[in-house]
Length: 133
Image (cartoon, rainbow, N blue to C red; front, side):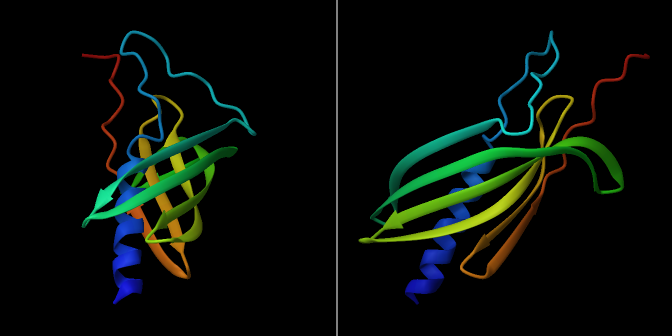
């Protein structure tokens, strides 16, 4: 039972935090360019089911690539993720990867692995604005 609760807590935290992986780009300007080796570290804490939970997540840009989601192709930054979640006196770690669209830093998809349990998340990012009307 504890393993199930642990997995649910970790999955919920990572899905919630992955929504904020990408910075929001200005509607008037282009998205900032990321380069291989760029990295960010996020920390957070809160209570889930009355248990204090702490999260440490590290994101590093691995490469620029193409990714296909829902029959659409996107230029994307492929980012490596590592995370540690601690709660109830123990810590657990995992890893994964995320794809963030280069044009506007919209999340495209993520794959997460926590103690051999994999989770995939596919986003449906809005279509880039068309220059023709």
